[in-house]
Image (cartoon, rainbow, N blue to C red):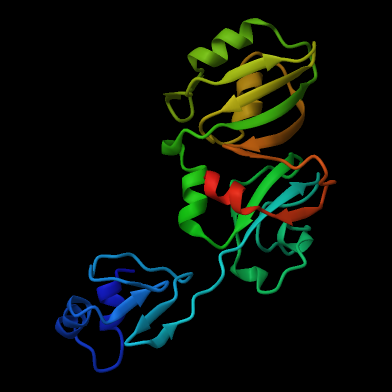
Length: 230
């Protein structure tokens, strides 16, 4: 919300009065005087007027989880274990998932209450790569490297996928980096070559690498350095 609108929502404060308050330097956000009414404020910001606290601000929270097999990427599910069920945190109903994984896909998940931050991490326009370790039923044809780099045609969406980087690690194993998140994209890309994906593990999202010390189902808070990288 814009700061002028936030102030105008106060009792007995009109939009005109909000602009006057700002012009006279009586409002502060996170300890800094703000004159610009278009300044965006969020639930994480501490907002004061004439030294009186209007909003204390909630702490932004960021967690890295190693998702196990058989866990739903959802905040609630009547039948299955969810990723939020794995967290022992207060008010976890306020958290959301940044970049979901399929039921049997494992690896890096980011959980936060900061929507703007998570959109920077997941929106296709950011071009932040998501890297997966892939195991397949049949040997991976080396021609996949060039075809993935050129993009594959998805008939259902009538589009060509963005260029993806495929690194062969063995006859049935590879590391794949995508720059978008189409429905079941990895499985469909290998399915284009009649090869079934038997295991899929996400190890990286943009600059964030899954902590190798986290066992499946374990999580930890992101460090300030990790948060600032996004």
